[in-house]
Amino acid sequence: MATAKVYQPDQELETRVKKATERISENLHIVANEPSLAFYRLQEHVRKALPPMVEKRVEVLALRQQLQGRCYDVEYAVTAIKNMEGATKSFENTMELLKNAIFYKQQIKYEEQRRKKAEGGNRDSMYKRLSAHIPTLPEDLTDVVRETASRVESMMSHARHSNAENPKTN
Image: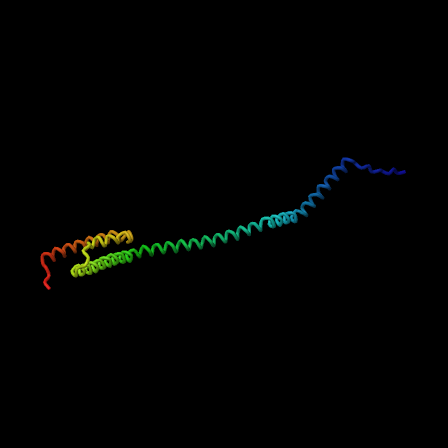
């Protein structure tokens, strides 16, 4: 009779085969799921990082617009200052015309006072009357008024001396 061979499993071999198949199965599972896991992580990152990034971008754009507006303001101010420098000559001419106007006004007052004196009017000094108004004038014009007042005073004294030397005949 033929003896049948009975297969006796090798325990060590089975353990090794079982571990190998588990590793292969695990690796296949990882390889099969790896792209989806990566995309999930990317999607999660984008959901968390995108809203603050969009807010910062909007904030940066608003700040850029404000900065650009302020740059235009500064450029406008610089242009205005340069134009003011060009107006210096006009201001100097105006100042000179004011000085002349004050001088002529003082001459007119002098002539009026002289006529009044000739008619028996007031004998006060022209310089005293003018110097009473000096503190009310702007500071820039005070020196001009004093100089003009001294000119008028010298003209008055010259006129008095010439009147004393050459009396008028009516």
